[in-house]
Amino acid sequence: MNTTDTGAKFGFTAFAELLNGRLAMIGFAAALIVEATTGQGVLHFLHFV
Image (cartoon, rainbow, N blue to C red):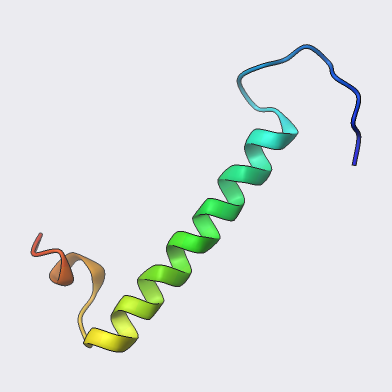
């Protein structure tokens, strides 16, 4: 991992992409857990459908 500061504070930085990927994995796992425990999809669970 490169620890040098390039001055970029926003946009497609390595940290932003890592954080986005990790949060997406957590969200996907949470959706699978909701579906496995309730027997409904996330949209049905949240009463959007």
